[in-house]
Amino acid sequence: MFPRHASFALGTILLAVAHAAQAATPTVLDAETSVYLDANMMQTQYQVHGGGQSENGFAPGFGVGASALLPTHPNNPNNVDFYTALDYQFNAGNLSYNGGLFNTQTQVTTSISATERAVFQRIEARIGAGFQTGGVEIIPFFAAGYQSWNRNVDITDVSISGDFYHAALLGFGGKLDVPVGDTLVASGSAEVLGLVGGGVTINNQDFGHSMGATPEERLEFGLDDAVGAHFHLFAKGYWEQFNYAGTQPVSYGIYSLSRPFSTTSQYGVNIGAGYTF
Image 1 (spheres, rainbow, N blue to C red):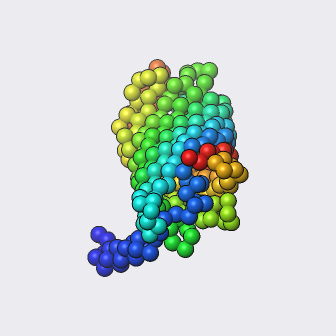
Image 2: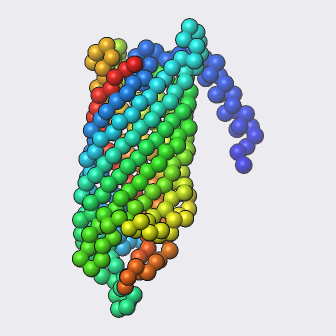
């Protein structure tokens, strides 16, 4: 249990920050209030715990989204800001697959190397509040979303194309926006999310749909530069790591297939343009 005195101290600090906060600077407001489109490149490292399966490779993609940071009382600068955002990312590419298949008739596991045609999708919504102090905008937020992985590995003996992972996302995070000059904003964010309601299907058949809740961590750093009255260019890099809880073995023809506990790490760079409204 969180100690009572620590809770009191944390509450006192948050109250002090809120009391001292002001509405965001115009540079930050412009950077955070926009619709945008980006191109990206993502690197994926998938590893089954205990060995046996791994996947690595790059997947290009694109993203679209919108965010808003609005003063709750525009005529009162000594107030907090309302923050909301919605982001969608799509990536598709070939990964190198190394793993094995267990033959239930011969009781032999065959090692396999193949190419996986992967498709990743991720959508996240945020809602929170912004507090500006000393020019820096502090934005705590709640987050919810969804992510999926269409795992298309074609193997001569048996096809596991249509291996579809999916899970809802739920958690919280924080973001810092730091104005650098009159047009540039540097930012950083950290999130702690939970993968909940996760499952796997193969060729639209249920395959251990009741995977347990597991964690996801995400760090992101970015730069946004106002190059015109309403137009912005931005670049950001991110790292995230998450676990899939896995499934029990299921017979699939002469093979026994399972999805064991695994860890996935993804790194990406996004470059795009936004329109401030």
